[in-house]
Image 1 (cartoon, rainbow, N blue to C red):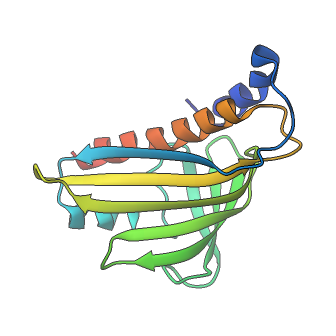
Image 2: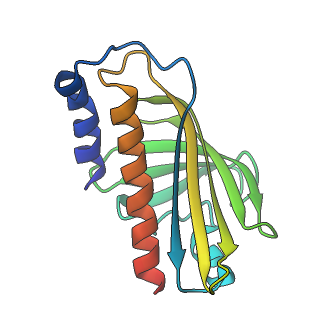
Length: 169
């Protein structure tokens, strides 16, 4: 689904489930993994550059707006195909461990305190396992519930990983 459609589904969740609009007091977690029939080096090369998030199907372009590529504290703006923007800051980039950690600074998503990581590991059977996980709270002014928000974030992560697999296999 397109990003805007996912966001609209999240906003409709309140009326469907009749949930409270109070913000999550605890952190919510989403974790998605996928096996890819490509070496870890090949997969890491495709995802590692903070200034290029073009492997996600919802992203039209990535613009580095502060700092240097793959250096902690760099800031990027993701321009989605539907015109929405998300601003993120790199917290850690480790080529040796094949892991990148970042936070969302500003976004139309109904989340706050959003931190995520993406990592690439060798798969015992050959190829790679890519794990993308995030931790966040639902915004206090969100008109949806935790279940809808975690579902939306899960769909965003899963669609990115599925597209990465498609690109590399």
